[in-house]
Amino acid sequence: MVKAVAFGKLILFGEHAVVHGQPALAVPLKALQATVSAEPAPLGSGLQILLPDVATPLRLETHDALTVTAQLVLTHLGAPEPDMVLRLSSSIPLQSGFGSGAAVSTALARALSLTLGRPMSREDLNALVYEVEKIHHGTPSGIDNTVIVYERPVFFVRNQTLEPFGIAQPFALLVARLGYATPTHITVGDVRTLYEHDPAAIQPIFDQIGAISRHARYAIESGGLDPLGRLMNENHALLRELTVSDDNLDRLCQAALDAGAEGAKLSGGGRGGNLIVLANKNRAAVQEALLQAGAVEVIHTLISED
Ligand code: PMV
Image (cartoon, protein in one colour):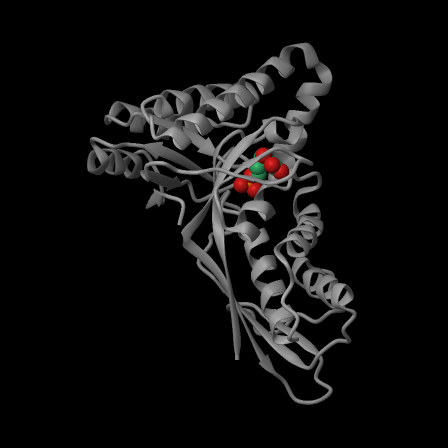
């Protein structure tokens, strides 16, 4: 049996502005992962994809992000449909800003290509998963597939070559999950509409977010982490101006700051999903405040190069 894994991801800075050409910083979230195992199946049974808690397997005829992934892998390799069962399991909550769609596609493409004896290069896999991301997101920037396929912290600028970045000094973040989400293509579409109605007002917001991402990269690469909390707060305020925060995200950010956190911001598409919190000093109190304010879960993660 072949097994392949893909991690979730966390956007630290720059979401939404990244769709409009600004840089963003994202890191793998190794606490959460999708796994796909591949087993041979009886002759003539074709390819079946088994999802957790779903009795009927998906087949290539079904038009679904996972079957499209499998079909794209077979086309890429020039391979016929194999007799095989691909079994998916994932600890990445759906639609929570952790890149679950890109992670399950990546794990599935890895398992399928590996079991056919022709593992795909990261470059090919990244391009393939980006194609699948378009089904979920409409006009994705490509940040999710890039960080998930390369499994490294990335300074991401749309349509530019990948720039991994270094983390001089690992730092801890709390990730609070709200338990509901708005599909990313909706918030991305709303930001686009906002921009098209008044580019002169919105472009400076994108530019400021881009400047924050660059500043944050410098801080993280040099190990001078003091400005990080402030940069997170500023980034969150700009995302509010882009209308992608909501009352719950704002309330949780404020609760974290009131409990002593240095910074907090939404992460990912917004209007639900999750927020990230920097709390070096009062971590236990901040975690408690987040849960009191309505977070359904708080995950501790260490942001490091490996
Ligand atoms: O909702 P998520 O975590 O997949 O966030 C996507 C990030 C956006 O910048 C909002 C969209 C994109 O394609 O980059």
